[in-house]
Length: 278
Ligand SMILES: [Zn+2]
Image (cartoon, rainbow, N blue to C red; front, side, top):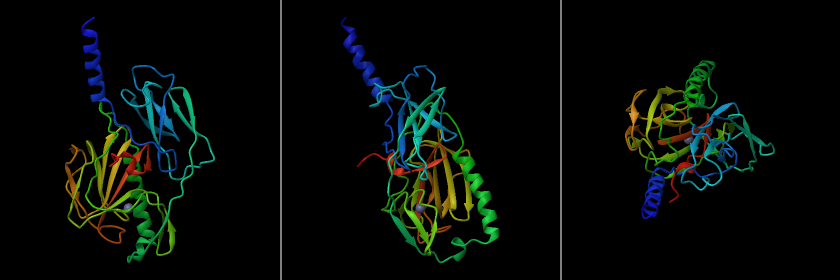
């Protein structure tokens, strides 16, 4: 048939236009596992779970995993995951097992002037636990937009001042590892939406300062901390590049910067895995 090659070309163009650019895979603590859900060929996205959290599932169409399965689970691996233990992901009634490698994150020593940001008062701890719950609720929020987000633009311009995953010491005392990427920029510089999303929460938090959390759907959220100004409110719909607010130094900081964290299945992962390689 004369039309066949034409139709095939047309379909291929169409598919490549709608194909998702998956995040970069890195099967380490703080990384991402891309699991082809072999054997599940239904038209509806399977519902997948990892460590009791719902996991993003996207069609494999046009991706390098298309030949292996119709659906791909994109699972964030916690920084505290044990590399000596097999990881278990469940999709519908099927189990998938995968291994993770160890990753040695570097240590970072910081000095903060506000001593309460290192050894909080009982009142501060009370406040922080309330805020933590608010943030966890946001990280666990589930929405299912038709077009999943799997890649980001950078939300701010500036050098990366602290990478994700650093083991942290504040005034010589060990604290939780660095759960985001720091971008250094002058106070007042714009912070922009790295992809389409909906504002879930805004607040002024003890450690994180002025904070915004954006929902991108399917368990993917991004958080912006230490802002000098917040220009959005919960429920606002954002397109890529829309203004969220401005760089600041509120909360526990040593200078003005954006702390940007990316969360998948309530797990903070390395934001670099979502950026185009340049
Ligand atoms: Zn940070």
